[in-house]
Image (tube, rainbow, N blue to C red; front, side, top):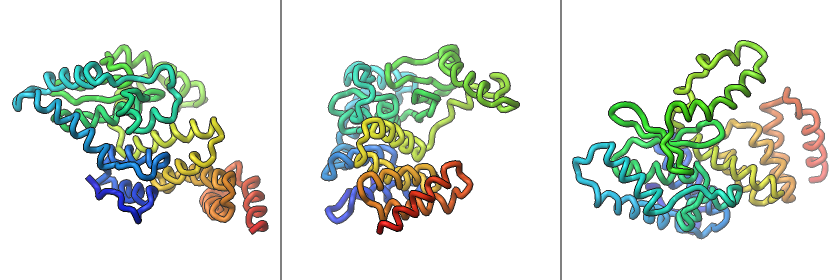
Amino acid sequence: MSASLHHDVTPLAYFASLVASDESFPLLEAAVSLAQDDDPSLDVQGVLAEVDALAQRLNTRLPADAPPLQRLRLLNRFFFNELGFGGNINHYHDRRNSLIPAVLATRRGIPISLAVLYQEIGQQVGLAVHGVSFPGHFLVKVSMTRGEVIIDPFSGQSLSREELEERLAPFRRGIQNSSGNGLGGSDDDWPLGLFLMASPPRDIIARMLRNLKEIHRAHADWRRLERVLARLVIVLPEAWTERRDHALALAEIGARREAAAALALYLANCPDADDAPALARHLAAWQAAQ
């Protein structure tokens, strides 16, 4: 694990240190650290130790020579039945569903937060578990000797190829309807395997942050939105639209100087964007007011 957060390191600086390198990207630690926007004093290492303890409980039940299928069956029974992890159906859009400490406490979350925990425990018991950024609903896959098992972490259900194809059909239709030319094509042009590739940790954290972004924007919670966007800019430094949105959130909380700097960077990198003329006028007004 990475070094714990010291009193002289801000949560944002700590997060930046975690996501600096793709080669040593601690997914669970980065995911847990997102909760420091709500609680800057959160003991991230304590939360990691709690997850480690859960994995150790399961490990003690597994024979050293247990084959992958036995490990998977025990993992599913442990995670979904004994521990009771599952989807928060009644309050799906509660921001706490994206915060790992809250998910650990309530055993309720959304697919991606549940997947992060499932993946960590699964890997600690010797399984090759990876998150999958499936359209509309995050999944996990477990690589076995003979193929892969795809699991919906929201329900604990193992999904057949037919069920996956059914879930993918609306997305494929959307591609075909919006392309207008060869981009859409047939299902053969968008094979199922393309959507079942393992998602890199950086992409998983970005998706978690974008979920929070939409929740905070829907509630006009500008301060939380600004903090989430500050993290998105760090994890995806060349996602210029996130930098633009960060500038607008900074302006909403009255940080005009920082907003102007962020917006100037967006306009410098996206001078031909459709919104560039209007945003350039905003930038001029902010700069004039300083």
